[in-house]
Image (cartoon, rainbow, N blue to C red; front, side, top):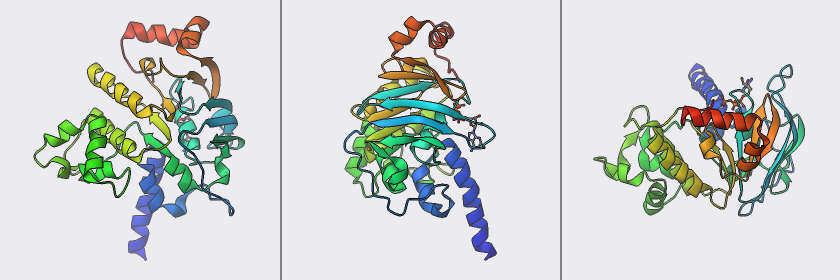
Length: 299
Ligand code: ATP
């Protein structure tokens, strides 16, 4: 009994940490089914996302702790196949939007819709299946790099894994290691840089090929050549997919269909890059600050 209890308790802690940082969620969900905060409705049907469903947040209110509201009446739509970016100070609620889209938690007011379906009415497994997340900081499993990429679609062939790695521009690096795709990575294996880990996460997501993407941009600054390359890979991964981009660098958001400026859980400005610059408000100030500081992270 004790022996069983300790690992489960450990997994519980791990699960909470992972959930917090949006890292490798699917695996932990499978392991910790019983720890979910939300449950499928008895009549829940699978989500029918189609190729690129629109995503809508309608008047969403949410608090982790009732005494401290985090999101206050947030409404926006990501039209099918478009990218909406969220910027704002640390703690303003950006990652919380992603957690709600993934249905880690249920909203307290309003609703979150994917393809016109309220995500509370469909199975969680189907919601998770429809969304691919490239987290800020990817934790790799202590396994081969092949396994780590193929995790995006269990059963994928080696050719499919390599094609995803090529598209994420990590193939040459992998092929250059003595054991190639069999190289062990993770805590007990080859240590990868932040940029390499993010590329593995992008390859995994490309292989999963979900209709909805969430990119939680890394706050830690990569060198600028690496950063530009990662941004190019993210852009090509997002093509044709409905994408929520949580951004810390404004250079990433310039082409977004709409940019939301979140502050203390409310959208204080919204529009395209050009519209927001013309508005001359918060975003415009952030932009000129970032221009003068170079490519430093905002958060
Ligand atoms: P960053 O840019 O630093 O990643 P963010 O805008 O993504 O910040 P969130 O992670 O959404 O911010 O967090 C919003 C607020 O909610 C923060 O004040 C945070 O402390 C709080 N918060 C986040 N997760 C929890 C939780 N599980 N329980 C209680 N409060 C939480």
